[in-house]
Image 1 (cartoon, helix red, strand yellow):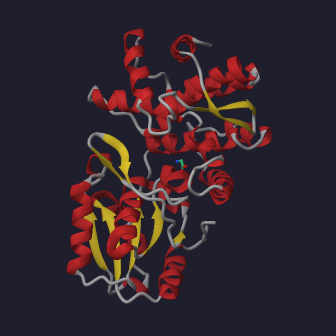
Image 2 (cartoon, helix red, strand yellow):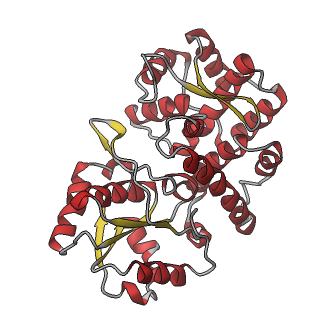
Length: 347
Ligand code: GLY
């Protein structure tokens, strides 16, 4: 389970000191180098750390950035007893975790996520990797960070869109958990976020994800529940990228949740009222996906290439009620298209 310190610098100091590494490396991207690294300037154990910086955003989550990190580790004299501290959003923690887990067959790494999305999802649970051949997270390994340190202090400088993006994953965790948690999440005002309240919800959200990952670290069963909203969400995300108008991951997940909850009502008896509440929340805070019915065939094709599919069948995690997930579900093409109609025009 990640740690949630009141003082990020003290916590980082303690974790790094206890690791007793022979060499320390801090990985940032161009943004977190300028905006987040200063919060660790008082960490004495990092005084002699070597800094590695890569380009920001998902376009740099590639083999070139990975090679750069490996090269810097070699040039900096990293050994199997060295430690890599990854300070950034999901791109940095995924790529840094992969670089560490493959360098000399694996060195230890610590994640300090700086975006809401990374705090509640990417940095927790040991999925690491890079994009390859135009496919997201195509190459990677499961490898747990030695420690994940979560400080919502970083959220003070996070823009509203990235906050909403991360919140979509929290909504997903609440749907997988209980009606009470869902209603707490639907009651949160994303237009005027209260950071103290958000911090409480983040702890609850990370706890849900951590428990799921603990019971199924390699996604053979229950961890597939975390794909709720993602089968259709990833298709929205990939299509937006192809059109040269990328959308944030969490926005795609929010639209995907609306569609997949609609499918859940049709196929698994998920209550209409809860589905409409979530769809209204999505509509209010995330708007609608910019698609027309001319996009449906291509979206379907993108879903057909999802790496979670089995025997060529599009695979969904759906809900029969809040907190009750049904894994490995299938839906007809017509029904999937109707769910897209619902997301565009329903309510
Ligand atoms: N992001 C989903 C998972 O960690 O399994």
